[in-house]
Image (cartoon, rainbow, N blue to C red; front, side, top):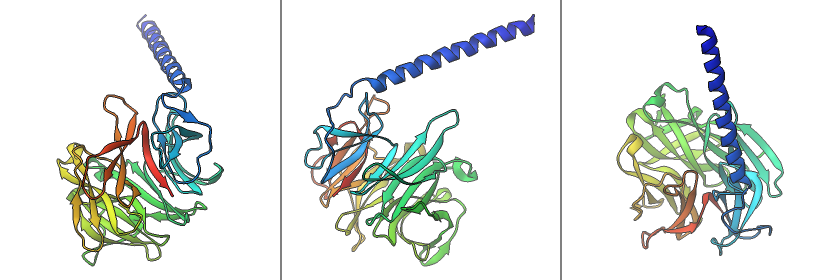
Length: 333
């Protein structure tokens, strides 16, 4: 009788779980099929524009969208392509996504301007960052990964570079790291947030977990080397004129309570200007132009929704909402 009772209770519990799951799925489907809460258009987006992940509830949530650069608050063109993190040029879209299921998988896919798949490869973990090189020959991707013994101290990433044909140029952890002119190979080194200079070189972040130190590094594709340039620099983003790097800097806290503030690094002088943003910014900054930066911030009290904000790169003025219900902006010129 005891076993019969256990079986009956188990069946009831499983049935209840199934009902809850079915109801949650139905509610999700209803939200996805509802009209978008923002104005959309069927017009094809061309010319100078901002490409981003739409986070407006309703139809198109999580899909790649775009607005004219001179009308960021206007109606958005929403594509059929769903991504969690993106970068874009006139000819390409790099799309990192979580493929949800009983066991989630993670992928990176490169599409051409018509939406046709060019190449694809697996990611080792949750998508974090992606960038396309100026000529479109190289694509960088960063993912959060688990399984490293030191990951309990902080976090672990895997950053790779692929060609536009999908050829893997390797994990940056296998490249040579130079700090103060000497080779350094701590087991707990991580790399993330590549920004390309050209199709042969780039900037990125190198972090040594146990030291709690991050470096701005310059990478050379031909020699597979990474040279440290400055400390306390994360998620660099090269300005259009190539003279400055926008990044996020730790200005308070540590671990889960860390506070990041946008800052600008002058490449020629090495001077750093911390910008007047009071909120913690956990994003890879994008340059709208040589004078203005963009970054995403979660919308308070609305899980899964974000806005893209703008801020003057010279430290004057206050930040302002640039595109509502948006994430992962890419400026296409």
